[in-house]
Amino acid sequence: MRIRKLSRTPFLAMSAAVAAAAGVTACDDSSNNHPGGADGGTDAGADGGHRPSVLAQFQNVAVGVALSHTGRTFLSFSRAIDETEPLSLVELVNGTPVQYPPGFDQNAGAPAPDRLLSVQALTVDAQDRLWILDTAKIGQAPITPGTPKLIAVDLKTDHVVQTITFPPEVAGATAMLNDVRIDLGKGSAGFAFLTDSATPGPNGLVVVDLATGASRRRLNDHPTTKPQPDLVVMSEGMPLIVKQGPDAGQPYRVGSDGIALDADGHHLYYRALTGHHLYRVSTDALVDPAASDADVAATIEDLGDLGFASDGLLGDAAGRLYLTDYENNVVHRRNADGTLEIVMSDQPLLWPDSLALSTDGTLIATTTQIERSPRLRGADQRTRPFTVWGVATDSQPLYLSAR
Image (cartoon, rainbow, N blue to C red):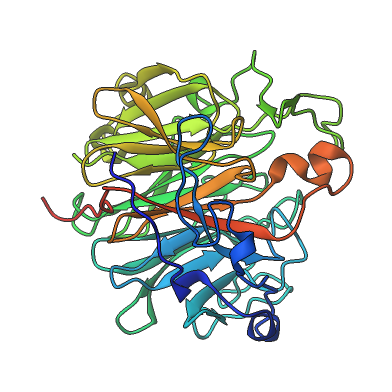
């Protein structure tokens, strides 16, 4: 794999002063923050992977990340992870975080059509529209059914062009809509695919017809979308055991989380957050209203026990799959033949979460330190700043459009 050094570009950098003014506190991106050396290069790690460059550092927990076709950068800050986040979605403009999109309140308050409560995931489609998944989840509290929403913003005009809400039978009080991918090549206007990682459940996939806004659950509480029952996941050499809340004393268990589309448009990859198996299912079956749940389940392929658990997944234009690995603090790439290689590794890569690819091949990963959170440690042992990392690859972003 070709690896090149990344320059210290300003597209994810920001000064503490302007960031604080915007309500998001950033840490100065000085050279001695770069584990790859003063130039921020991508040295090979001790495990044979590649050491990433620090692209940005925050006092807040950046979770979701998306890049437009022209290089605009968006980051989300989930209140499901940290209830005190001052903002939930920003665009970085000349290194300065700017509340985005226009016209939406992001302060704490009652759910409203023009309020972003807790943006978990972001993605950009083939038409350069930003899709914003507001889970409406604050901490571990139940959501108000009907408040999660999926919003599309045309990045050429910065205008909201579609807002989709979910009925209670799709996203009930325990729902945690977690990740989203868009394929504009299916149906008359495309489909969105989401995961529900609710604890204690139900888990499953959600499919949305973008032409009508109609949504339905698929693989609801299917064994492949549930936490792996016999697995205790590890992080930083320790088993992850819940220390706070109703599940205190129990192993940490979370269902369907990361998803990714294949370059052929015919398969959706998915994993439980606490599971070692990787699965894929037919997207043609998922979107077919005549297909029963049994018909959909019949298309599931178990791609094997990978030996690690993932949070974020991301497909590239060549049909390869990137997978975070929070158990070992690395990011893997799964090639077309099923082989795995480490493409990003460094000891501070604590809980790599969401992934994005830029048009120049830079792979970006947010890190959230979930393993050090009060729920899993009994007290907040996270170390600030939180870091956004990047490493150069030979990949191109995957944008599925009419085929």
